[in-house]
Image (cartoon, rainbow, N blue to C red; front, side, top):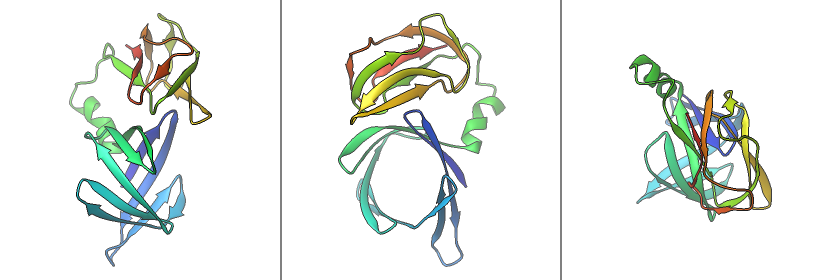
Length: 166
């Protein structure tokens, strides 16, 4: 099954195939990765290319919060099926509203849009600095910027609402 994992502005395809021997063939962005997972209470203990990572997920896909390796943040995890579900059930609406949220704690560096701007899917909206790296957050779909909830220089928590997209 193909998953689309979005962290900040980057979407990464993850292909997972069950093998006859009970193992898994995992490919991240097309590259093979050795993965083994064991549920341990409220977490997953993952061995990824020989490195053990304890992963705690909170929430239900597509929007989850995570903690791993001392880093907390937000991610979106979708499949092709979950992406199509709103269209198939008629619940998608061109006037639907969605927030662009901070994927992790950081500082707003630049706003690349203003209220009222029309945007296309994939268009850069805002730049957040986190862990000394600039992360450009992009529009997940076409729409209009209804409201900007932060200013350059603002410190934000992971999951904080930044921009309202209609």
